[in-house]
Length: 353
Image (cartoon, rainbow, N blue to C red; front, side, top):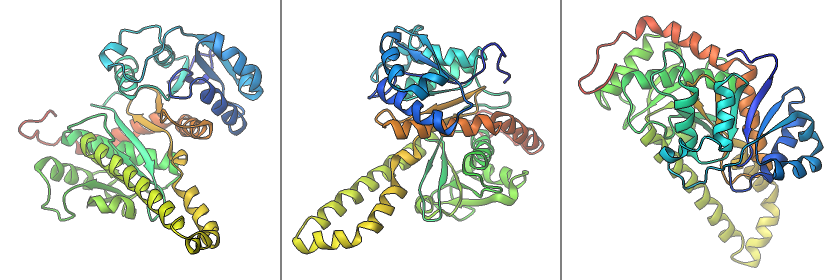
């Protein structure tokens, strides 16, 4: 995408999406302005609320242009209804990307609405059947990329292969890996496990330009183990795995609090263990992993967690900036072009090519 010279916005930002909007959004942009001093933002939302905030956050004010949007898409609004709210801050921000006024959009608003609007308004890249939601999480060997996290409940062989290509580029762009390893999530690691759709996807990937990076099938425990840098699956399974992992982390945090508050001796042990526990807290801090990305669109689309704080939102901006600076979409197109000779696979019964 080439952004018009007259409107060189790096990112359009939905100022009214999320639990703490617009305060958290502007505070996050203030942090982002320090990290990315050359970036410029189209801040979309209620001018009456944004003006006083920008007076307080001077760094954000220096890099933001406000565009008024009178409507807000609530968190419980259905995606079909959100499509009809043309004056919403989310829609206006997405329109800016579709109109090539900005390279990408960041929003902490309604996830379903963002997915629907982005797919319909921004549209997919040539050669991409469906976009996928990708995110980063912790593992025993470092950060791991997982996709799809819920954009597509069911997927074809073609979808899984395209997700692998996009996951490869995402890991290179955001994690800085030169040759990320890739695994297909399955019910077992053996080659005969899974259905025809998964086995055919594995064959296609082995024959492709990323074949040397393809590890094969991985299981649920391999995600946290960091067996591969990229884990590819359908949106139903990916979303279940994501929520299960989040729940396990919350359970562990709660159990640690109980253990270290159970007695005087436990409290003394906490004081001794505190430096290590602080390092663990920083490593598992959800704000560090904030910013899921909708891959495969004609523009960068990043979804921030709705309940994050300023630091978490600034991290979502960081993710979007990495994708813009490193020409993410161009690299996706290059990867798909290299995949073309091996994607002429037979169509399985009951699935689309």
